[in-house]
Image (cartoon, rainbow, N blue to C red; front, side):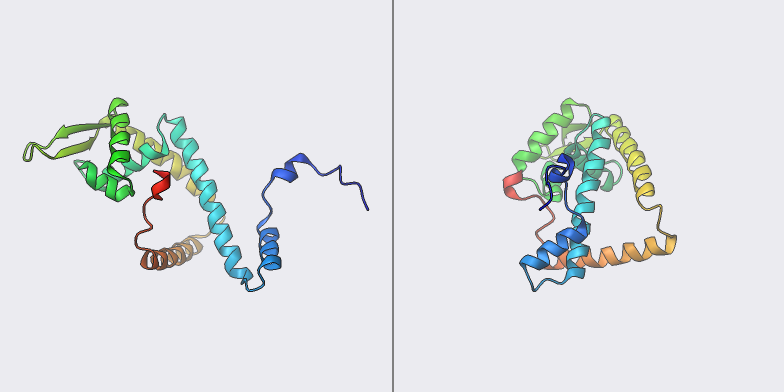
Length: 188
């Protein structure tokens, strides 16, 4: 039996390769399709690592990923980049209380304004500020550089095929789990 003391500390805490993970799963669960598991595990790891990269981008800009989600929702709503808090909460899968907390913070940071709707004084409108739009644009610039680098080894045709395949997978999940777009209630 060889000396095991030369195992590096980095290897002990590091994540196994996809191949090692799939092999371990197959060992423990014989009914596993290794191709399916490799695809799903790769997608999961890619998503996690992309979220970390995006989080670093937003942190460098002085905003959180949560702020980014609100800014994105307002931009996607189109000019004049306004939505009601309940519409924002629904779009982001948040409770009204969580949305109120997020908006309060973003108003303080100057990223959005919150005003009463002039046509319906009961309704509140959240609107993107020029500073908020500037943060969104800068985050998009950083993300664009990262994403181009991520896909640099794929041809235009491969990017097109990958986009179509991932869109088909997304549609299948959205159809099977139509309520899974938001956050889990215990994570709000």
